[in-house]
Amino acid sequence: MVSKSAFLAVLPMALVNGVPTMMSAFQGSGVGCDKPDWSCISEKLVEVPSPSASQVLLQMFGTGVNPINYDGVLPNCASTMGCYGDTLGNDGAGVVVAVGSDCPDFKVGDEVWGMISGSYAQYAVAECGRIGLKPENLDFVSAGTIPVVGGTAWECLEKAGLVHTADNSNLTVVITSGQGGTGFMAVQLAKAMGAGRIISAGSGDGIDFVKNLGADIIVDYHQQALADYLENDSVDIVFDNHGAPGTADKMMHAIRPGGAFQVLYGGAGGRPSLHPREGVTQHLCNYGNHMDSLKSMFEQETISVRVMDPVYTLPEVPAAFTRARSRGVFGKIAVTPSVVTLV
Image 1 (cartoon, rainbow, N blue to C red):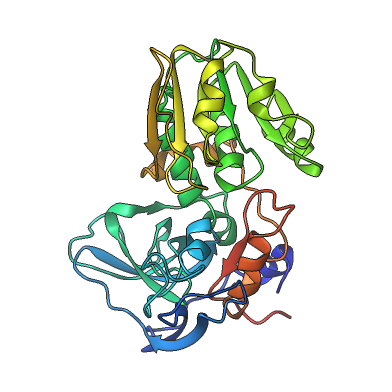
Image 2 (image 1 turned 90 degrees about the vertical axis):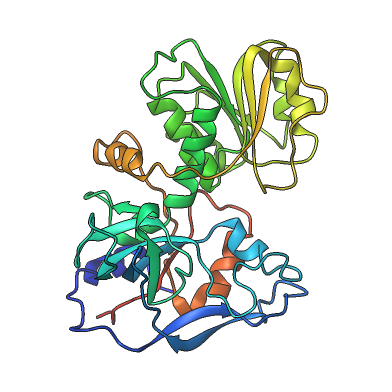
């Protein structure tokens, strides 16, 4: 493990001339992990992929740990992402080293971020329509943690009716869990989009963390359930990024007619209510490609990244997964697939 500051001190580096034929990648073995000892995933030496006409080849310098990355291999490879020999990881940031013929918007040397399947590797291919130029004021490690959580938070808030260009000063927005990846982005985005009041939940050090993101009210969920804190007809939007079963029903009394309940697809098994209030819309929401909009916000410094120390190297993916599943994670866990020798 390396600290973020130590890593960034040596990160600016010239790419090696040419692209190697082999690389390190973290892949699934084809069987699930019965328990989180991560025996079903390991670092392997594999061929560097070749981009198709609609893809670019990236040298990867940063990627994040998202719940889908470890949920897919626990307990029995429930999804194909990361199992059956696939390389893990689904977002990140890197440098373009080869460009497909149908990708006129990118060139070799571009620094990009976005949705990148197989990002837990030294090189990865990405569809040109799912990446964009990374913010100039973000390093690779920070940028690599944002695409999934940033794109998802933006999509869910937008579907709920929180439009960036509108006057939202009269809206009250609830983010059910402001401490985690999607939550810390959702709180900041709701604030940047002008929401008049933001309510979230936290505990311990997470209370100050969420408050510093811009939330107006943080409910200590060890003392009181967030749904119990909310009064009838007191909020306009609930974004349930945690997704615990039954949350929709518990929150419904607080949502005003004309409001919205958004629950993150996947999550912890949450679903829309079977008995919603009249006038309240509901949706399962997921990722949306908003990389250019997020880039603009980061460069304007209206939102920021929260990356926890340490930054994990590729062989340390199991340790990164263990940390991500533990308590006290505020923001994002980062992995650097192409790390240089520290001096």
